[in-house]
Length: 166
Image (cartoon, rainbow, N blue to C red):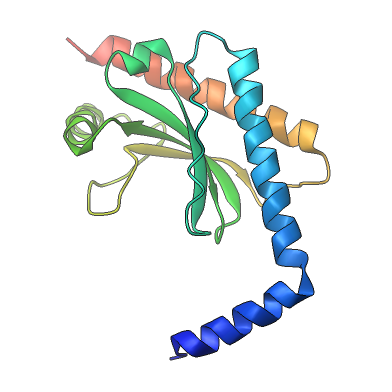
C-alpha cells in the first residue's frame, strides 16, 4: 500500500506534465456551460448557479423541475471521474425524502432505471447512465446526448410519480 507521501510525489509528477490541469479546467468549463445551457433552454426548471466540484470523484449540478421541486426532489447531472461517464440522478432534499421516495419506487416494482439502495454516502434514489466514455471532441453532440437522456429521465420520473402518489 502506497503512503500519502508516495501519492503526493506521483501527484506532483502528473501536475508537472500539465495535462491534468488542462483536462480538469476544460471539464469544469464544459460543465459550467452545460449548466448554463439547461438554465437558458429550460426556463421552467430552476437551475441554481452552483456546481459541486467534488474531490475528483464526481462533479454535478442540480436541476429542479417544478413537479419534482414541489416534492422536495431534484435531478442531478453528474460526471463520475473514475468511471468516466455522465449520469443523471433522482435525488432528494434530505435523507428522509430520499428514503420515502426510494420505498415508493421499490415497492411499486418500477425498474425502468437503476434503483440505488439507501446508505451512508449514497446521494441518489435512481440513476441512469447518460453517456459512457464521452467523446469530448464534439461538445455540441455531447450536450445533445446529455440533454435528450436527461429530459427523458425527467419525463419518466414525473410520469411515474403522477401515477403512483396519492
